[in-house]
Image 1 (spheres, helix red, strand yellow):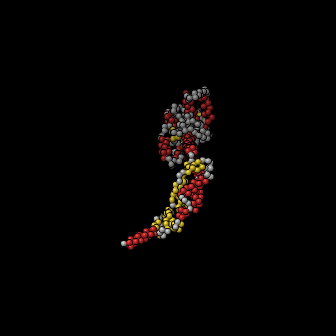
Image 2: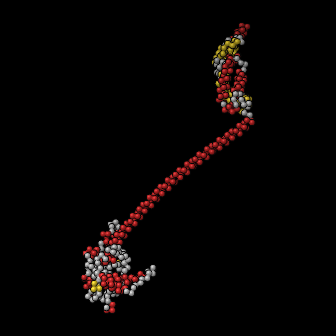
Image 3: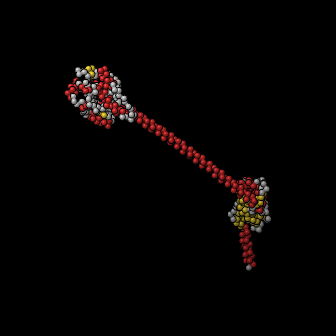
Length: 460
């Protein structure tokens, strides 16, 4: 029985020793082993064996990176301002034996070294530099802390300044300053925006004025060109109208001259027309008074004696010269279209044709109507004279082709040389010609003729 008890005790002792010899170290930790109170080894994570009773595990150290937050530290800057700085330090235990045997409490040691290093770094900076130099402070702290804790088996991974809080008065001043700065920047931005807007507006107005000026320029050029073209067209129209009018006047003058030459007007007829026109001239708006001398009849008789020859009945009569063939053809010619270009104006051709039709209508002889008591003398005189020209439409009125000369009973008028007979113009015809000059296109007025002005009065 005693042997059994001893066996059981022995088994229990062996089991206990075996259990004491087995050490399980979790992942991320390391175990410090002492043998008879002296450091012998560091056990890593996993299953480890030690000698029971002789070896023991003093402490397990966490080898992961750990973050330590320290309370805000009051630090004085170079410009003697106190600021509260909240710091966070991240470190890792690389050598657990040094962390255990090198320092009593390495976490507290890191805190103290961090505070001292922070005061040393910030003490060389002003408040403004401290607020704006976070990266610089972090690098300085990490470098100095890593160097100071290397003997403890620690590695400083990172140092961060969580907050930098200046005094309340400084904060108010800073807030005012920042507010002023913000207002300043706002005013600057507003001024810049206004300036840019004014510049853009001015550029837009400039471009608008340039475009408006160019538009006015083109409009003025177009208006001037249009006025020039209109002036040219009006001038061409006026020139054409003047040319056609001149052609018509020239043709009318030639026709009148030829008709007068072919009709063989006598001075008696011209004198009678002159006397008939005197009352009309006196009744004009000018109220011109014509004084006819009492010896006017004697003057006419002297005129007849000078240009006529005495007939068998004792009356001086004018014998017109023979009419040339060219004058007859000119008087009889009625083709006015040869004088005008009517190929491109049908209306003008129709108007001329209508005028020719009116001109070719038969017209009663005014001389024959006035001297109806001598038909035989008129027939004989016609047979002796040249064939009269057809009437033409000249100046808008019908002109007789020929005027009957005086009857044989009247005294013959003196002869007038050829070329001078055109000096006489019937009253009412307007202009007087000389040697084929310009004639008026007005129709002679033969109304009121009753007798031969050179016929003897009272049987004389």
